[in-house]
Length: 119
Image (cartoon, rainbow, N blue to C red; front, side):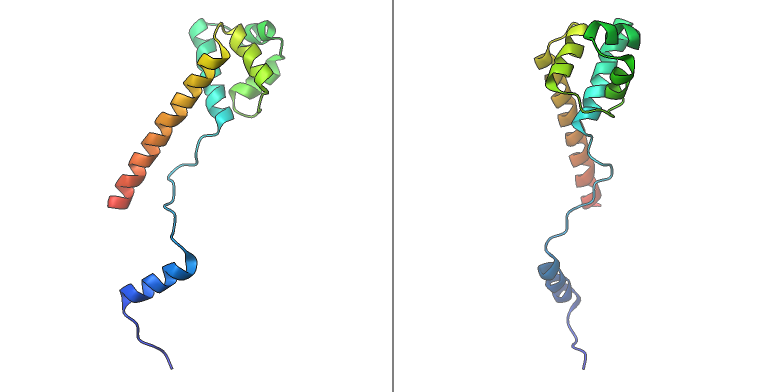
């Protein structure tokens, strides 16, 4: 025979069995390689350089640099340093910019999640 249970009590019992639910993110988190690629493309664009010019200065192929800029490749630290040097920036400046951008995006996502939860 079925048991009659209050709604709130039933919900609490389900949560105990499943564990606490995580709020869904509206967008997937940006990957490091994607944020790095965006930043590299911005640097190159500000300098008014063509992809081939920057690739040649960095000692990489234009195809490889294109894939890095599009976030398709996960470059080694040596490759990042070479590309940063070709763009006349340092590895530490570039990685700091990427990290700051990711923090800003994370803060924006957290704020929008909080608004969604409050609604």
